[in-house]
Image 1 (cartoon, rainbow, N blue to C red):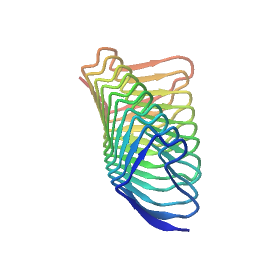
Image 2: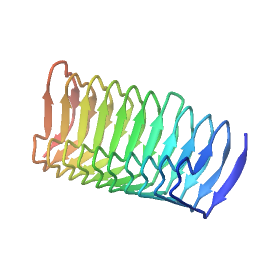
Image 3: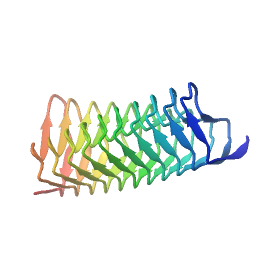
Image 4: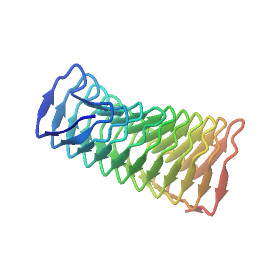
Length: 244
């Protein structure tokens, strides 16, 4: 139940969390520099609601920001470069952060991962050049993923699998090496009003028992099929999409 401001510090080669916010705590974490952390640089849990803004996370050996066990921070306008794991990980039922206007690039894993029944609003982020999916939602997670720009990753732009729900809306996805949006393993996400273009594989790829509702998406100039559905049990619904 504490509140504090952590402002304009440098944290380098930390072997544990550089900052941990837990048990109904709040406060501001702003304008700090985190370099080469061995665990998550900032960890938030236990109904805590800090504002994490304008920090830089560089070459982390783990996750940049880890939100778990009902953490509810605002994560805004941070810069993540070269994380070994996801730049932002959101885990566990009850976790429900707002992740807004961050830049995530050149990571060795995915950009943002939401899993284990977590929720959250992921909006207005710029994600590029990561080795895996720009945003992954899985294992029962139900986030709102809206108005993000995802460019040139080696994985899918947005990957939904293993009973994911939620909404993927009005994102711009381009030049990804795998599908713009990939849906599999009972994921039933609503995918609405996205622009998917210039991908090196499929625009939308539903396979291996994938579900999902795809409406009013614009898909163009992909080297693979604009829409591909295959594999046992895949039953997506498509309505009013524009294929160019």
